[in-house]
Amino acid sequence: CRDSKTGDAAFLSVSSKLKGKNIEDLKNSFFTEELFSPTGRFSFYGPPTDVKVSKSYMDGKNRVLEMGFSILSQSTGAEIPRKAIVVASVPEGTDEAVMLATSTTAIRWKKGVENDVRKVSESFKAVASPSTGMKVRARPNKYDDIF
Picture 1 (cartoon, rainbow, N blue to C red):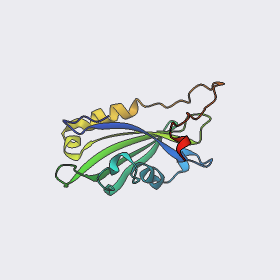
Picture 2 (cartoon, helix red, strand yellow; picture 1 turned 90 degrees about the horizontal axis):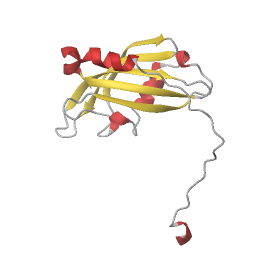
Picture 3 (cartoon, rainbow, N blue to C red; picture 1 turned 45 degrees about the vertical axis):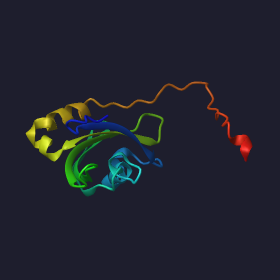
Picture 4 (tube, helix red, strand yellow; picture 1 turned 180 degrees about the vertical axis):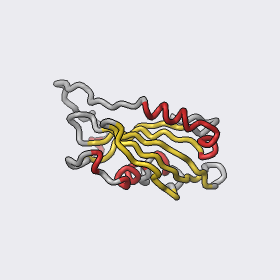
């Protein structure tokens, strides 16, 4: 979600397969490439620039990355510097990282919103959903018979 008045944002993203690697062993680039991919949340108007991870550490079972980057403004095309905290966790029994990205503009960060961003990121916990006996079935498409 994003506050349209302030630009403050928080969103969840699920990574590609970790291929059995532990979250603490992954390079920072794994997370930045996942978040800033061409189909990523911050890439609507072009890929983010000036991506710099300032801190990367483990907090219990969570990997935390503090970073800065710039994105293009939709209305003006100007670059807007942002600060973010990304918390990644691998729920038990899965092979993907669930990431919470919380961010704000660099100006708002300096004015004290950093504390709010930290509170939100510290509240993050990802757990696997309970397993069920339900089967996934593809829904038929009404246009299947045309071809």
